[in-house]
Image (cartoon, rainbow, N blue to C red; front, side):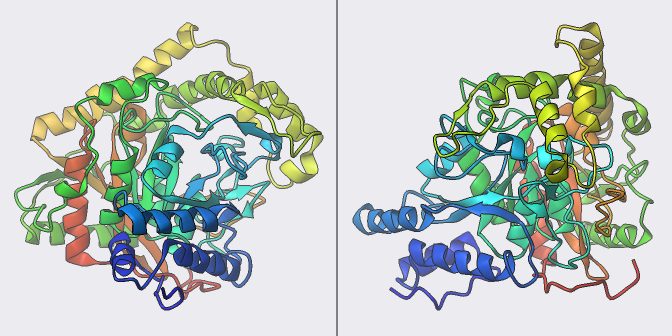
Length: 515
């Protein structure tokens, strides 16, 4: 079978499966092509630094899947599909799981994360671990997104001196640059949708509880979720369907019973905007970049042409309070300390690294960073880790009150209230501003975002490409109530199919305009 004639650039899962059925491609050949492309673009050439390590077993796994396909047919749409995992998702194989930190290098999980096991069961090939903002960007108050001690600074493939956003930086950059078919990211607040929009791809931040978090280095059990990142809504929907289901080790997933789906493709309808009622929350989420606003206005006009009723404006009543209130950050500090120490207790020594220290507490990690400051803190510190270490147990009233406040402001008094009042199917807003220049010394200069209400409430988001500001892609976000992924995917797919605004990166060194 031919292994070198298939064009990887912008290939979809359907394209790959059709090529395999036609005998034009094998899973092993596909893996080998991606590994060659990673070597050429991620390790050399523009040096994207989006991938921390590749899976040495990937070619053999793909070859075994080829044999299985010949013998019994494919397991499903992900059979033989190479997938990247963010480096905070456990795999029980030769790869490390470190959240980008040297502190976790040399210890290992005892089993796959639930999502990794689900992907293996679906026939996917775990191609490698994607670079990320170290500790999911919960280390410093002035960090640079996409930087980790293990992976260095990931780059934006559209303009290399621009930031890829985070914390799922490499998961987005690699897919934008066609280094794998699809990837998994994680989000606490913006960590899937921001890098997806800044890198011109689709990102799904699922409802908290739709997808298991077992075996994922945590920040917050009340906000963390794992989600797909892909070049098309269809591919993201395929990946989402493989990840759902109740996991007895993650109590949050119990609420998804009867509300999740193994197949989200059935909700994709190119005419899916017709008859939809979509609200536009302008307060807070518009006005930070005139070029982005112009693109979103054009997107709203296109949705009207496609039959949607655009209700504009319909501000989230608590939008300003969500920005100003410290409740979310308080929750994250408390939960990071508690959840991380539970996670650390699940790791064991790795015989390949007999002298590696074993991190058991947040205090251990802080001490490790201080002792290895040259490698771990050459540009910024660990202020957030230190703030979290000062917090007490989750039984403290300060935590309980902050959690209730956060959920109420974003959910019952926020997204739920505005959608009830106006009878809406979804809300739509700019995902964020264009990518900023990477600045390791001073950190990020993020230009707006709309992820916080859904993050605090545990509700879903879907971001899809909306166009370009100069050479830099930007996206729009569809948001809704808990478990409204079918509706959001329907709307996002209809918009995508009518506009087709994604285009692959060309690895420019600088923007063609002074932005």
